[in-house]
Image 1 (tube, rainbow, N blue to C red):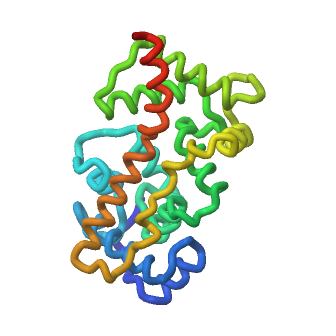
Image 2: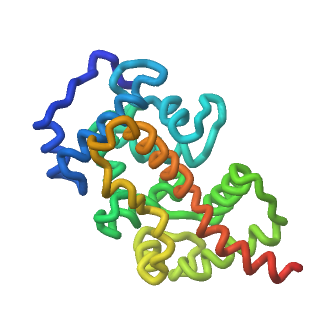
Length: 233
């Protein structure tokens, strides 16, 4: 777990160093630092983002639990020490930058859906993701429709027909279906700047909330649900 003694003041050299490792420039990294400070101090001002603080940023609630928030925190917490440091925050957000390589986006999405961290995505994991999506979106589907979505997913992505989707299969699936990764890009991240002054924190917060929304995959699942609904009418 992180310690309050690790709080560090970042300066221009730190911003430049992070810029050289990510898709952001130094000014954009500095703008992200404004958002990071806001998030990391909303409960405890220790220079670190806890899971509760990330939950507040994404869901505007400390009590509401979310599978997707848990997965987001796990992936942002690169050191897996229970907190998100600024460097981890910037590196993780960089994946959502419009200029980030598709390979990075595909890997992040795969790790997000690999709930049990086994190195592949199984049918039960896809089922959990769909049920979590339906719950968070206040939607309902009959079980046969859920099964149909799972079957369709594995029919298209499980090239080896072994009942699981590994990283290689996922990359091939994403390459053949570019829309699968469209929600891994947040256009606003290309335009962040300290010149936004008063509206900066609010705008960046909304962008972070948007990331939470798109990771749920509402658009992609919706596209799969639509034809199923039409066949049951």
